[in-house]
Length: 108
Image (cartoon, rainbow, N blue to C red; front, side, top):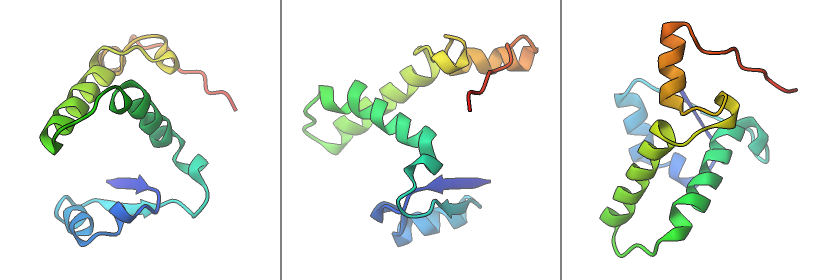
């Protein structure tokens, strides 16, 4: 399995590299100054910032972790996504398993 990231300092730490090895993940870095190569995660980070992080003032790491965890559950299970036909990712996943998901139109 491959995990793609930008070249941020958090992705060059020994802890991150050790975790990748432990989980048998190949770490792929996008080229410098090419955020478009990682557009999906960049879009998610923007939504996370706008819809979660900027709404609260956290007093501890634990508080922030809980808020982000809840947002990720909301994002995957409740929040509708226009790119998935206005359903949640979990609903799209189940429809895909059932064979009832509509094909996605990719705009180029």
